[in-house]
Length: 222
Image (cartoon, rainbow, N blue to C red):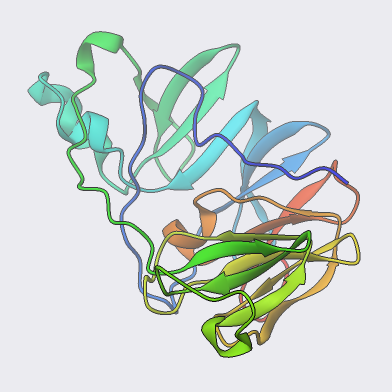
């Protein structure tokens, strides 16, 4: 079993994504076909042909928003997406046109304060559970928000009070909430712990560890 902790982007800078409403579904969704990434609409129709090694969601890039180059700042908005082809990174518009090529000199600094999660994973007897207290008595069942029963827990960034949690049980990946309610059933070989949930309320999943697609909180595939 392989647990993936995905990189947001390849390079010497980080991309910050805009916060979305919980019921928001992006109009264009990255999808790979034969190893190349393009974009489909909500009905599964290919809108931007698959030609990229990396295709990210249409979302803000704070490095460009804070660029020292005033002309580059516009391309940091959520009207554009970051893609990579032949190790060259671009921003494209929703028609698929490359409108900007990344330059190191254009990249500003993201200054978003770090906020620690209210919850954390706790390991007991080789299994993981969830706690919100700083100090707990492992012998007291009530000290746990979720008693350790999972092979892995990873708390996704987004809602500090009601986080989504990627979990592994019986060698299968799923998603639970803090009440230990199953959100995404334990049927996947992998669920990436990237920023897709924080950005657009979608989980990136795979049944075979090779081909990935997105599902929403109702496990509807895109």
